[in-house]
Image (cartoon, rainbow, N blue to C red; front, side, top):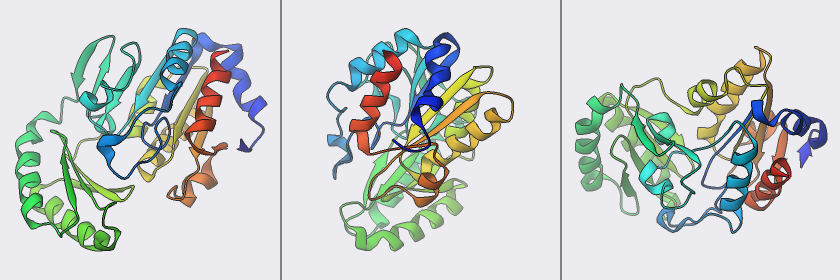
Length: 255
């Protein structure tokens, strides 16, 4: 674990677990990256580690660009979930939706259908109900075309185009991202940590920066991979080598 000494970074979580929270991404953090997003699975042992940690801390939340219905298939029911970068979630067994997002559902559906018939060969459209992801992992050479298409669709429908890992996310113009999620959940805590590996996780680091200014002990943990943005690695307090080291960290915090 680098670049800062992990012992001092983790000490507040171990000293005041009832006033500490951990939030983490799913793909590339709890689950190894795979070519087919539908084939993603939790690293063996991660589910139990999350449950053990949730029993110890004030809250443990998985925050992902995935829809909640996908996350529910892979994560224990006791773990709080936030999907689509803050547009929906599940907590204490109850589903919720961001109040500003529902009005965009029809626009998202229409643009998803348009993307399916107008995108380059090799691009895959993932409709998530409240957002759309245009994937090009299976055809990296069409990445520039996908980015151009995303910008055109965003302008046409009034959505926001957010570059992600070998993909582009089309979101309603709603003030929701991983940074707003972190602030909402971790405000008033003694210690808060976010673990992520992608450009879409950088707003979570921004949220931690704002919390740190109010006195929260904030830990920004980046998961290293060939696709991890350099900015994320440079800003991180901890750099973990893949989901295996993430699992080790979760177990340390839960001990």
